[in-house]
Each structure stands twice: as C-alpha cells, then as structure tokens.
Length: 438
Image 1: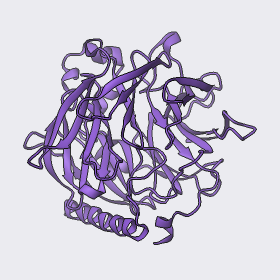
Image 2: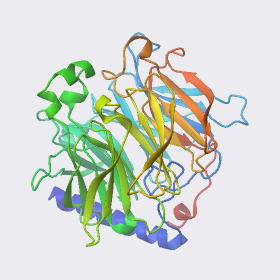
Image 3: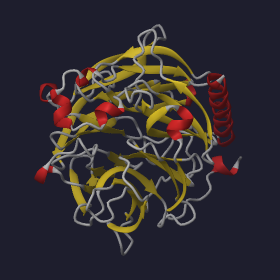
Image 4: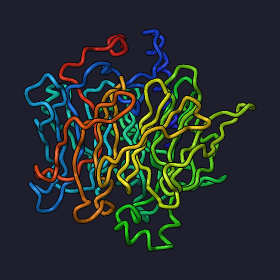
C-alpha cells in the first residue's frame, strides 16, 4: 500500500514536471547550483547574494547548537564576505545536508543523529531566514533514521535517509513529504537481486525517466570516531557498494549497479540529450560513470582514479560544471580541490589541483563556473583533531586556470561551529516562467 502511494506521488510529480517543462519550452535541468533538483524554479543565473551554511554546533562554542548561517556574498554589498544572520535550532543533532522546495521558498535541513528536520523560510526575507517548522517524528512515521538528501519534486520533498530505527544499520529508504511538511509515504531501498539496502544521494534525469541513488553507511558507523572506525574491521564491512537505477514514474528499481567503496554524490550531465551521470567512491577513490551501453542497458564502471587511492584521500563532495565539461572534486584527508576534464566522460583527466585547507568537504559553484565555495566539516566525529580541525567557508575565483582565494570566514573564530552544507540564495528572486505557469 505504501509503495503504491509512493509511486503515485512520484508519478504525479513526474507528470507535473513534464507539463511545466513543456509550458516554458526549456529543458528542466537548469539550476544555479548544478547539484540541485531539476524541478527547482526561481533560478539564479547571475550573481548570487547569499550563501546559506547549515552548521554543526560545538559544545562550549557560542550557543553550542546547530544553526543556519547566512553569509553576504554579493561583492557590491557593504557586508560582502560577512555573516549577516544566524538561526539556531536549540540543540545538536549532527547537522548535515539541506535542500530547497521546488518553489525555492523554503529550505529544508536535518540532523543525521536526532533525525529532526527543520524548515526555514528563505523567501519572506532572504537575508534573514526564519525557522517556521520542526519535524520531530521522521523516524516514528517512516522507520528511517538520518535524513540526508532533500530533493525537490513538484509540490513534494523526497528525502533519502542513511539508516533505520530498528538496528541503526545501513538498511534504509526514502520518504515523501508534502511541501507543507506532511508525511506521505516511504519506500525501502532494495535488498534483493544484489541490492544492499544502503542509501545516500538522489539524482533525477526527468528526460530519461531515471532516478539514481547511491549508498553510504548506517548510524552505527557514521556516528563513530573515524580513527576507531577505520581500525574496526567488522564495521568497515558495513558500507554500501551499489547504486540503484529506478524507474521514476513507477518508483521501482530497474537495475542494481555494482559500485564498490561507498559511492556518494551523484551528478547527471546537464547537457541536453546526454544520458550519463558521474559519482565518486569514497573508500576506493575512483570516479564512476553511469551510462547506457550499446544495448541500451545502464552500466557503471570506474573511469579514473582520484589522487592515490592507496592513500585513501577520501573524495567527498563533487560539483559538475553546467556544460558538463568539468568536475570539481574535494578530497577530505589531503585537503585538496581537484578539477577533472570531462570532455570525454569515458576517460576523465585531472588537469588541476590546489590544497585549499587542512580538511575540505563541500564544494558549490556558481552557474557560470566563475565562483567556487568550499566548506570544511564532514561529520563531527570524522573531522580532524587539533590544528587540522579547521572550520571555514572560503570563496575562490576561477579563471579557468587558477583558483584564487577571495575571502575566508572562520567559523571557529566567530564561534559558529562546523561549516557543512551550502546553498546559494538571492535577495529578490523573480517568479520564473515555470512557477508562474502553475
């Protein structure tokens, strides 16, 4: 029954998306950050005004709570490169990822530990987000733990989780909510026919009726100290090694793809007509291409190493360029930001690398590819210790040849916490044609 409800919600969203795309005569895969859902409206094609940073609280630092921090990132502003607002949620729950609703009015963010979900109004006053709803029964309603990916669907929010409330292991699923924050239904990640039940990222290609999910690990692992985890041979066996290709309209898995080493972030090529996606495997340090073969079957294969895999550089976040010709990759352990030439996605080539911090995690780029934002925190218990535990957001300018640091906001110095996920915001987002047509 739940699967039928979930599939119906997905199907309605897919039909609505197709109708919206047809009404404006433009491809759906357009967004200011290339990791955003293709169903997002009110797009930023020019200069962004704000950067929203979902930040982990640190005991004894400021109020110690997780918070949404807003930075002014418009160079014409008198407060350029400064914190202009912060909204504390009154506790620590392992703040991690965030995502806009399809109309871009609200930003959903959550905690991997306490499974609380926070809904911020970023439309009424974009420079001063307001917490308008807290969802505390995610685990009770869905049986899932660790809400991770917030993926906009037309009128819906699809949430991918990392764990479950039964044993806190890696078997998990996805939950569908209305934009108002009402739980609708959930579906489990497949465990049969080669499926391992793990989840992580969600990425949709509407034109191909394709949804791709990746895999990580459960609560028992991601809440453990990283040094302890890497020494625990039993725990290290509990990481995902698959990706799942789903039929978007029916919400049923069509194929289980073998991708060893915890494949994390997924990025579809945004070039119209392309049918491939790319991901990075964290533990095996490799770029993987997911593409149809000559017979029309989805396949996944390793196409390039990231650094020296033997040293486990730990690739974390990736960002594909809008023209799909390049890919930024952050590797956490060596604090390096790498650029890969994707002119031939079958054989990516690293053409640039820069040490951008003692530890780096998330990377977000502007639509024009000229600005790159980098943050530092991975997980509270996985971040480095001592002097290497840097916590910042940096802006870099990219001229196609060199990354040049523009400014740095030190989150520890400002007693804000650990900077994690970033989303771009605009001071006044005009109603897009897609939104106005509804």
